[in-house]
Structures are given as C-alpha cells and as structure tokens.
Image (cartoon, rainbow, N blue to C red; front, side, top):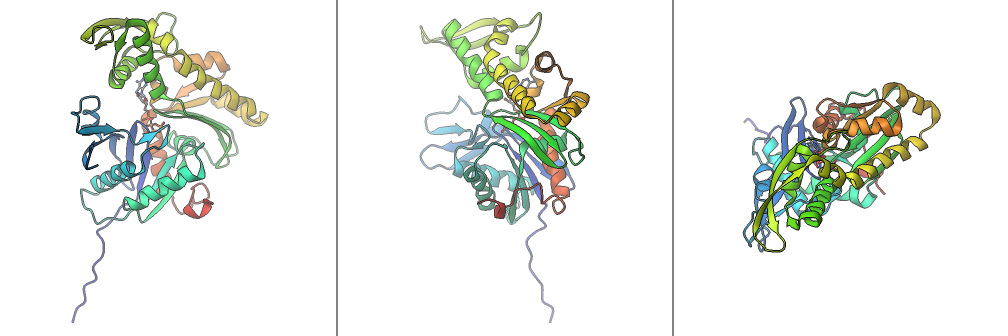
Length: 346
Ligand SMILES: Nc1ncnc2c1ncn2[C@@H]1O[C@H](COP(=O)(O)OP(=O)(O)OP(=O)(O)O)[C@@H](O)[C@H]1O
C-alpha cells in the first residue's frame, strides 16, 4: 500500500514593506511582485472587505455612505489592526496566485522608533494573516541594504528614508544602527500642508489625492525659480459649489516649508549625535536618500545647502526598503542578528 503525504502547497518566503502609503511585497527568488497602495475599502456596517490596494485607492473620497476606504497604517504603524490583517492576508494570497493554503515565512519592516507593543502588533497581524513565522527589520536598515550600502563594513553610512508617514534617519556601521532618529512626518504631512494652504488662501476644500498630485507635479522643497502652475478643482467653502483655481509652484514651496524643515532638522540632529569618525565617512560617501519623499523636487539640493554634505538619491528610491527586506530574506539565517524575532520582544 502506498501512503501519500499531503503537504501545504509550496510557500515562498516574503519580504513586506508595509508602508503608510504603499505596500510592496518581495518574493524570495523572484523580486518585488506587488506594489499597491495601503488602502482597504470596506462595508461600513458589516466590516466586509470589498477591495484592497489599487482598486481601493480609486475609491478614496468617492465612496457612497455605506462604503469606507481606510488606510490602516498611520505614521508607519498599525492604526487599525483588523484591517491591516485583512490587507496582509490579501497580499499574501495574491503573491501566491490566490492559493489560500500557504504559510510563508515573512519579514516585515517597521520604523526604528516604534514601541515594543507596536512591533508585537505587526508580528501578530502577519501571523493571523497566515505567516508561518514573522520577523521584523528596522526600516532604515532595510533601506540601506536595498540602496546597496555596505552596511556590514566598519564605515559610516547615512540613510534618510522619507516615506508617507515617517522619516527615518540613521547612521549604520558594522551591521548595526549607531545613531538614528525617526519622526512621524513624511509625504502625508506634505499633502496635509497643501490641503491646509489651499483652504486658508482660497477657501477651497481639496482631497488628499489632489494634494498629492499637486505635490508630485509642481511641489518643491527648494528652487530659485519655482515654475509650473496647476489647475485644481475642489469645493468652495463659501458657496459650497465646485470651483477651479490655478496654483503655482512658489505657493506650494511655501506650503511645504514646515514638513520640509522638520525633515532637515531630523537629519541635522542625527549628524550632531554621530561619532566623529563615522561623520567623516558620511562626509566622504554622502547622505543617501530613499523613500518616495526623496523624489520631492529640490530636497537633495536643500539638504546639501543645510548640511554641507554630499547628498545622493538612491536608484528607485520607492523600492529600496522592499528590496532590502527581500535581500535580508535571501539571507534570513545569517542575518538573524539584524532581524527582530518575536523572542527578542519583551
Ligand atoms: N515624485 C514625488 N515627489 C514627491 N513625493 C513623492 C513622489 N513620489 C512619491 N512621493 C511620496 O512618497 C510617499 C510614499 O513613499 P513610500 O512608498 O516610500 O512610503 P511608505 O513606505 O508607504 O511610508 P512609510 O515608510 O512612512 O510607512 C507618498 O507620500 C508619496 O506622495
């Protein structure tokens, strides 16, 4: 008689950049297979998930009364546990071609400033969503690995990862974070600053998607001659009716001043705390920018001016964290020192 052993279908280990704005999934041996907004559309009463990712993002600000579009991550951490779990389950299933029987090992990145409770919440969400084992990696470390920095060498590497909800600044040497600063300010705060500016100056209410488009199209952190104008549509707060106005680059530059200054200050404070030998390495090698916020026009030039250090934007800055998480995944056994395991959490 021949016995057949039933086993779960082949599960590939996954690295997940569970971001405030976007979630990227790296599958071992294949690379980044999923890049979707961290958005979930739900039925308001039944809490039934209707759509996740790209499809759900299209619904933001456009849902009828009984549907809500939620961003379950805020400031780099879980704001809504159940919705994050549903979102992770969707991405795990999607990455495994919709097979629900998979139980992969997962590495997820978290901002370096999060609490033990917040770290535990991410591990729990991954396990509830179907992970066999879940590990965490600190976001600046993943960003540095993904940007190709020699993190294991005895030399100072400075990374500034500007995401949607957080900005992580870290100096890394010999496989560890020597000094770091994590602030809960990122691209979302830039969008919010634009919403506020347009409301104050023009009495016009615009949505966060419109604000993000303005930032990407004509926003700048620094420019001697900000150019570009953009027509935007919103709701006139006086008449209550839709209205179109034209806005220019100089206005958006001034609207973005506060979040941009906060980011620059975080970099300066980290440099001040950096041991001199490592600071001198950073001076030689430059500060490396990753994350979507690195693409804000003129931010690199402003940082050069303010720190007097060379500054470089990494290749594909939006992918660095996911790529670094994936590279850690390929060497999961040798990198256990860098990874945060459930046992390491108190
Ligand atoms: N060209 C651009 N100019 C300015 N900002 C941009 C540009 N492209 C993307 N962004 C911004 O980058 C942010 C998303 O970056 P990223 O995907 O690295 O963040 P995240 O990983 O989701 O967030 P976090 O790391 O905070 O959890 C968004 O705020 C987006 O508006």
